[in-house]
Image (cartoon, rainbow, N blue to C red; front, side, top):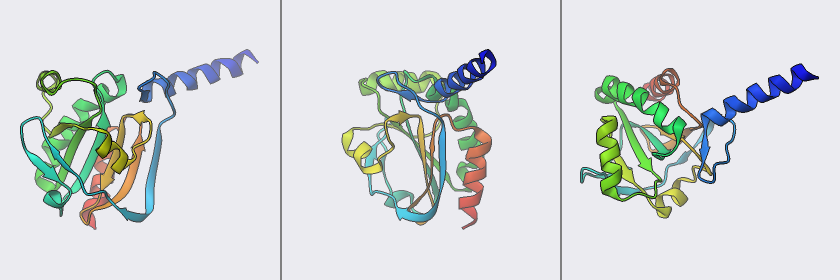
Length: 174
């Protein structure tokens, strides 16, 4: 009995480390590969550096849309892997978009992004983008969009670099 409780507590602790909820409730890491592609929502965001990005402006690239926040430990933990992957794969057709759901000013978020040395576009998004993408109530949530503009993969929880690369390579072949 004690062993079962200990195993449960270990498993539950791992779940807590992998995702965040704004109300401090967490869930298990979830990942799903779409068997049938659905069109990604058309969006237009202005990044912290003033760049206008939309689904149509990124056509022909594999896009990773990452919903995250500065206060979320798993979100912060995946940033270094995203920086490395973006450096390695940007010229091969990967676009990473960091969609922050923080309750910060753009200036505060920009300061965090600069300190973290994030090399991919980041935008502070509102309810319209969240409602369009429907990432769910947990972050980080990563949504992969194929070169044709279809949602193909959704991952809830910390996304490891190896998994990011594997999904990118699969979608980039198509």
